[in-house]
Amino acid sequence: MAETDQAKPLASVRVHPRSDDEEKALKTKNRRRKFKLCGCITTILLLLLVIVIVILVFTVFKVKDPKVTTNEIQLTNFDVNVGQLLTGQIKINITMVVNMSIKNSNRASFRLGNSTTSVYYRGISVADAQIPPGIVIKARKTSGLNVTVDVMADRLVSSPDLLGDVRNGEMIMTTYSVIPGRVKMLFIKKHVEVKMNCTMTINISKRGIEDLICKRKVKL
Image: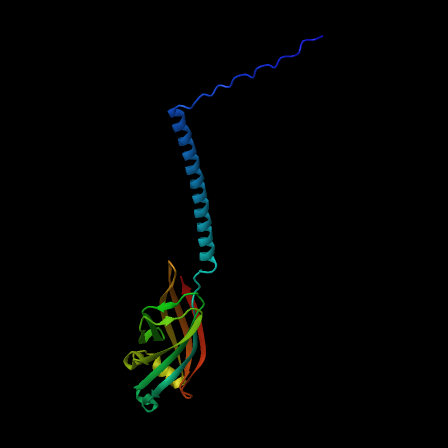
């Protein structure tokens, strides 16, 4: 009869306690992992933030040029002394009002700078008007602007073409307006300059303006 198997003893387990150097090395390794993880998360968040800002700048906060329109030009004062045409001497007084509208399509206000409107007759500057700075066009609003211009008679009569134009009953004049301004949205500042050039014919007998043609140019 076979002998009863005796239970074999289990192998003893030896535990090697970590030295201080090994503990320090493990802690340093774990700390580096945490730093790398935090650095990666921070980099990803910053990258996402930059992407969001770029998208907002080119979509929601994109600066749009204001639309300046010359609605009409009226003669509030027009006096030509036709009785002196035979002697070649002309007395003339002209005052006109340039009616413009400024449409601001931005999500922030548009503040006007020093603006000017000039009047030319056959290349000669015959009038200048200053538009005071500080006028504010609110966001997504349209505001009207009336500019009164007094034509300087001495400059006008200095043109050798004036006598012939008066005899023909028509005077062709141009207005040139320069309207600078600034749009500020959050940390974004954008300077805008709008130039408006209008050509018109003054009908002397009707004392009115005809054939008004305007062209607009925007510089961002």
